[in-house]
Image (cartoon, rainbow, N blue to C red; front, side, top):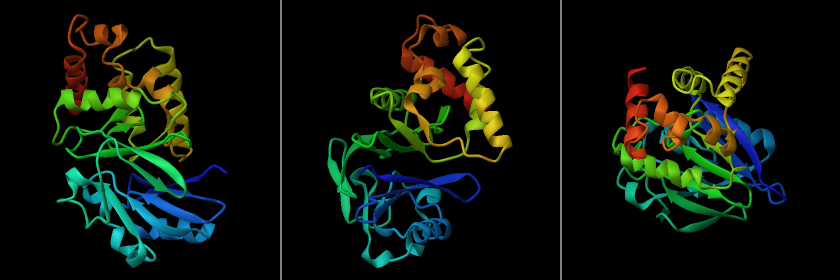
Length: 255
């Protein structure tokens, strides 16, 4: 039976995600911005939390950890390369490692750029990828530590996943990302229709996360730095895609 996916709004614009095995009622949470809404969602579904997956060290992804129900019995999993900045880890992972969570296999991807040591968890059988602040809905995370070339490499890595993968990212930034995307490929019909859908969802106070990789590939500027129409839109038709990505990211930082 497929895992159950629960999107949990936290803080002002964060998301945590709970995945649960409906047969065993075992559950895991990906990132912990704050404990109370996660504990409430677990209790409402009768889930037994066993595992916490951490994508990166930023406070708004880890600060709720100690408030989780049953904290002392939880297995905490995070990146070996980020272990010095994360809460104490029971399991340290690197790119290429696989883990079993709620009875399902997850592959570890290094998606550094937003931070160095940021990881994503890809559950291939479940068609789920937890990308936090790397690939985001209609955008990507600001480069606090990594380089544009590093983040472009991460974007390509995620873009190579199956197109029907569901992308679970860490924030409700989609409307501002949409406004920025509208300044680039102004005649892309997929972008135009997605902007309308995003605006309608937010007007109704509905989340725009998760999303699908297929939709991101067709509309997200940060996945399209090697697409001729996007290269032309930023005046870099003959440039290296990493440089195009850097130009797009620089424009977004000033937007």
